[in-house]
Image (cartoon, rainbow, N blue to C red; front, side, top):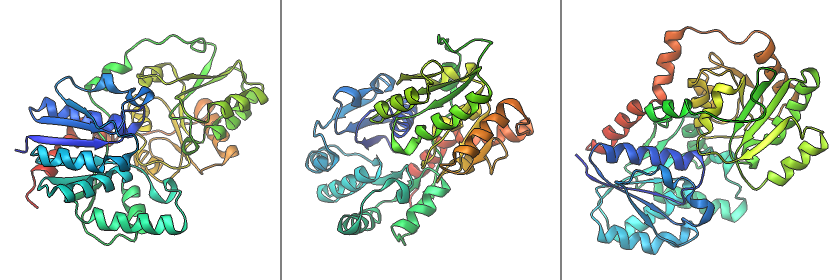
Length: 372
């Protein structure tokens, strides 16, 4: 059994990718493994998820700021500590980790995790795109395994980078576990939660990828027909001022709320009538899985990638085209006031098991223990 394992990622900010790494690390350390979590920056907002890290994990802050500055300190760490396996997450971190491992001449098993859709997430053009493409193909081929968080991410990765190696595989994120089920039960106070309101809930960073501007405009159409509807968007990010201005322009100040980041967004599910994911792109949106597992109704854009897999081609929720305001408003209206999808309870339970901690941790354990 591999005992000494490192997880490497940029920060412990409030994103789904970071939360997944913490969950994997926590589960491994609870199995009796010696686990280090290594990050580049823990200042301010970049340490939001620190309270979720198991106390038995050794947290190492390289304190180097940007990811590419981590090459030297990470190389020194890999030379000093006999890690048997290193698991990196996110493209830039993966490249840095692979380079550092090579420079350190470390013999640890290397697993790189791809958590987003590169054709949508990467904004590089021209020479920068060419260089990054070369870096990916040079470094990723040295990995024992490149784990993509959805089949859609895997296919997009292969096509975007023209990647020909056969070390790609898909393992979903472990987003459902007993701790999550406990968090669902927590009580939340909010002025929108009453029998008089139909509450639409969204969760995510206030960034371009999440496209909350689309959701706010689609909600405006819904609210015009149904004044009892309310919208809560949990999260923080650089587009807050833009969304606040949009809410004011549409005269939605009293019916749309942006409470900010909440470490337990799951507790809101039981108060919501509908959960909406409006993203332009994703990797595997864990919050959509968690909303689905909580049995709240869900509407999602059919963005690359993840929602179509999570909702099983629309079997367990409503899918709409990306960036289509009319379609999103219509789907929210349908879910709240008309016929929603119907499905068998046993097939729903079996589907959700793919995303359960026990299933995913077993897959990572098998990957860590495999000889190939």
